[in-house]
Every structure is written in structure tokens, then in C-alpha cells.
Image (cartoon, rainbow, N blue to C red; front, top):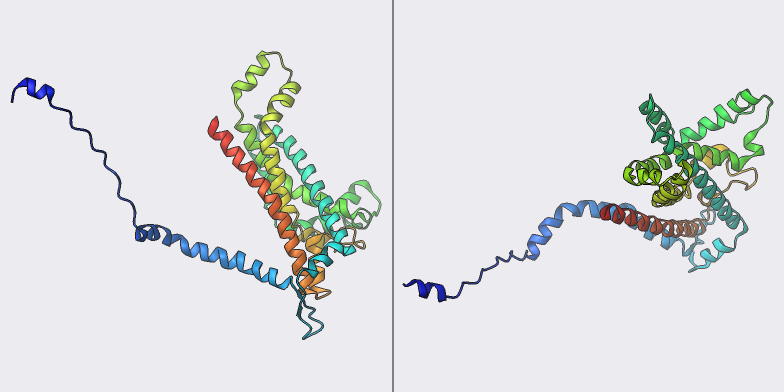
Length: 310
């Protein structure tokens, strides 16, 4: 074959190998190891919630055997119109908002301090994280007896007198306990944001003549906004379910001064034995938590997108 023939011969198109489309059997074989975890999650979370939904449609008082009947959404009307439950809802909002706001502010201050290098920073960081590792019930008992006790508590030991802090300032007593326990959680999230901040941006602000306060206010605080929102939202999800501190420190009192929704659900179940009404209140709490969790997931998604774009 001559060279002219070779030059005129059309080039053979390159063939692209197409991967084999996985069969249904292959797809299920890959998913099979995850099925036990999925079944476990459904049994532990979804089945109890469906049972709770069913109970919320019943009029069921354990003190009146045989009186169980279907009432539809009447229990939800009772939950939204009952004075005690409305007071519990207000207490829940006040308790959660106060603890979250104070914890975020203190966590921001501590994170800024720990972002600087100083001797013993590792030890200080460990000590500041410790309160978050204490069991909630143990933390509540510690504050009730070691700090608030009118006879031998730490506060009266320092200030003198015999003030019963729990009886006089019940909401403040519970909020202070929660702030002590949850500030490290907020601090860790905000500290992670501080340590991921670009040093070039801070240096550029200094070169442009910005003061330390201006740099913090217009550069650092703006950068930390998603982390502050994330810590506040995650803290709200956990704190709206607070039961240990209220039950241990104040028992919901004096009167209903610190009775929040989880504690009111406990009273409705184990004191009034109104199972249907308690289930309806629990569903309302779950719906509120889902709303807050939705905002939290959006913030987390925004954080991931921001890190990817950097």
C-alpha cells in the first residue's frame, strides 16, 4: 500500500468505552449492608412517633379504665387553649432564648481569648470544655446543692446571708445552670470559625488602617455570622427539650414559674395521667423542633458551600 493511500485513508474514530450499567441486583447488593441500620433507625424513631400520633387522637386517662375513645384533633385544641400549657410554652421560649443568647455571647468572648496564643492555652481550653461533658442531671444537682443552697452554697458563702436563690430567682437559677453547661458547646463552634478565618484578610484590614475593633466588627464578626447562627440554632434544638435542670432544681416552681413544655408533658403523663393530651403536647414540641432543625440544616448547608467556594 502506497503512502498516498495511507494519507487519504480516513482516520478511525476513537471508541469510548461505556461502563456497564449496574443491574438491580448489583444496586441492592450495595445497599444491603445499610439495611440493618435503616431498619433500626425506623424502629427506634419513626415507630414511636407514629404511636404518639395515634395516642394524640385518643381521650385516654389511666385513672378511668375503659374510657378510651377517639377524639380526633380535640387534644391539640386543648393543648393550644389550656392556660397551663400556654404558660409552659412561654416559659420554654424564655428559658431557651435566654440560655442560647447568653451562651453564644460568652462562647464568642471565650473563643476570641482562646484564639490567641498564651502559655497554658491547651489546659485552659480543656478546663473550659469540661462543663459540657458533665451529665445534665449531675450538673443540675451540683448547682442546686453546691452553689444555690441557702445554708452551705457557694454564692451565700461568698456574699454572706441565707438567700434562697432557687425560690427567689427560679428562672435565673435554671438559665445560669444551662449557660454554664452549654457555653463550651457554643465556644467550640465559634472557635472553629475563628481558626478557619483567612489571615490575609485580617492583614489587609490592618494595612488599610482599620483599628482592632473595626476589624473585629466589620471583618471577623461578618465572617462568623454563619457559625453564630449555627451554634444558636443547634443550641435551641437541644435546650427546647430541657427537662433535667427544671425537674432537679425547681420542680417547675414556684407555682409554674419555670414549668416548660417537656416538664408539663411529664406532669400531664405521670400526675394527671392524661396520655392523649400529653401525646398531643409532645407532637407540638416535635413540630417546633423540626422547624428549628430545618433552619439549622440550611445554615450547615450554607457553611459547606462557603468552604467549597473558598
